[in-house]
Image (cartoon, rainbow, N blue to C red; front, side):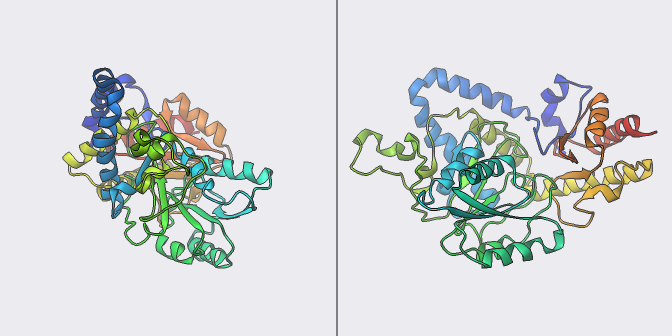
Length: 387
């Protein structure tokens, strides 16, 4: 689809069979120039580079996210080195003198799950995790739990990292949340993977993700879209959260900038945001949107599954696919298998790059792939797993 834009990645290791678009997405060639541009700005502008970062680089990145997610105001987007920083910052908006009640799922990524379970150990949080399976009743079961009330935070993924299952009815989920609860949606596996339309929920929910996966920007470009008019004052706060007031000196109360700046942290390396802009500009120039990317990935997934059927491999048979075929999914395939570590190693020995999450093997399909790449993958799978 866009394979010609990844020539540096391919040339760096021609023998590699990379199908981990959902994990470490390769960087397109344009990010090399973006990386260099940040170096040049840092040397030419020194401390004055921050003026360019906040007046040009960040607004451009905010506009890209607002366009792709259908947000009403780009200024509602904050950036951070990673999404975990936003996890802790959102928690810090809640009262610290009470035990917090959190409704979430059993399939959240480590950034949220680990932090939440650690807070549970200290008695600061009581969390209920709703299983994602059975898939066809997930939204119904999650909404029913929300309606029991009493939640301080509601947290779930748009596309779940351990299965690619899509929580399709975000509007119903947002509507069912208690009025005083923070509603947070992890969109890391959604942005640039499938169409996102937050027009009906962005006034209620926080939506976060980053550039490491499908946005092709690597580290350092975590983002958080906050609801318009949000006036929360995170206790976990850095000096960028009042960047525009630095020259006036401190007041009696800690000041917060308007819009999403109130959720910024402190000094960070903005190189990831430079790369993010370069990747998004590439998509705009090529007239490729998230719908086209998802169609391309879905076509390649079917090509791979059809090939596996022809091979007749028991270890990667259709019955191991989670969720099963026909259930809405993102841009990777997850197989639940008994000998996941052994299969993963045998594939690795054939230079196949995927990843493993416990019993699940994940194969990701991205814009840098063509059908011929999938054929090459199938040949390697056959060498690794055929008896």
